[in-house]
Image 1: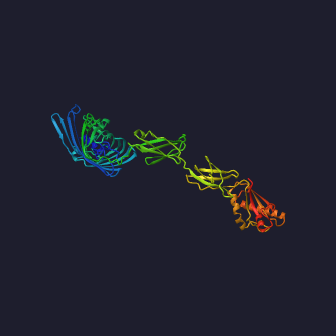
Image 2: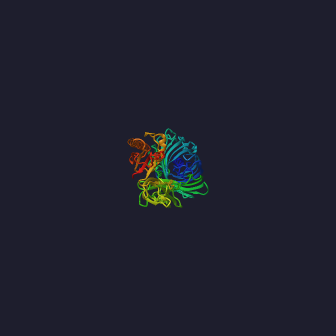
Image 3: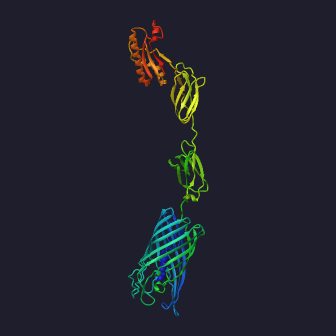
Length: 600
């Protein structure tokens, strides 16, 4: 009988894998292996199992009596997941065993029934990886075992027990594997069977269990087939009386080891029916002692529960990888930006290679875009399948340069002195060279690619004019009018009035020198001679010296205004080169002048 009670307690202590129903003692699972998984926030399961068995121990010489044992148990239980980490569970059992012992014609019957121990449990679950869940389970068995299960003679004291386990769950698609291992401390007291006095309750039996279980299930939607294997190793050193004389200690074969299988049918939303059975592989030690008289036998199990399937949260779609290379038409790697499914990735500048992981696998093709400044963007379509979870789908790109927007350049070429149009040829030198001629009115128009250009304007009989032009972003270039200076052209400025006998630049003279400065700045490459001229009044020697001083003063002033000194020479001609008569006041005024003579 003690063995029967112990087996009932073991069954009450076991639990099962997560398949949206309580186990045989409350926590989310199947028959005996506690699931590491959590059923989902604010989820619950309630219901009951009914199981029974019958076995017969035949008469032997050592045990002349025949023992027939039957049992029926109702196991109500339930769980409640507080959140996605913690679960509370509770359960009990109502046991209805019967035993008949027949010795010769004498038959003895025992039909105790009553409540078994009740358990409250707490489970903690956490995700260790995408398909791996780890957990801790603790259960406390509250002393509710009915006194009708106590053996004649007393000595029994039901106290309960404490269960602690490590849990691990591994998902493989619709399949799931769970492992349990831990320790159970049994606080129930029983007599010391090594003594004659069976009322002695000083010992604690058994001190400790080591439970281990493994279970596998496969969720097919409307039905979940499952199998599990569980064993309890009892750390018991008590010496038990045998059927004859002497004592015997618990051996390996005196520990229960259950192999079970079943089917769970989901008949309505949350309502499921479990049918199955299990077989005790080890406990067949009836020849050792009456206290181990359990024997090989089957359990037939039926369960009816309301337990919504564990909420898995939003389904995480499968993702794949896209990879490829971006180059130009010559095979040069390009550091392009890759856009796919709302995400961006950068190609390696050195190789042009890119990798785009985490792209959702679906029926529709995935659009991939490669973009780089200055190049025409390109797109491609990729169909991702399951094989692309690890092996990337390939999408390469060859990008073409964008057509470069050109800038409009226009202007007019004129004679610098007269303002008349000049037929000229303009050469724009950059990455490309562009040549354009003026029309009859001196106008020119052309288009330029973005670049910085050195421009040369050339016309027969004129000095070359050099200047720069910048074309950018297709914007029109500001009008570039060009003034051409004839070869050996002379510019005369006779309104530059120095004080009598002086060569000092006054503010009035600076104002008068502005046209002269403009000529030099507009034609920075001209080689010129600055000639100082006087009238014939006074000593010729003094006038030559004075004109040289005035020419030097003008040259120094021009140098101060950023005119190149190397392009100028100053010469004092005095009265030696008159352009008008010195006999009149007006003529003498014309002769007092500064001239620019183009040398080159």
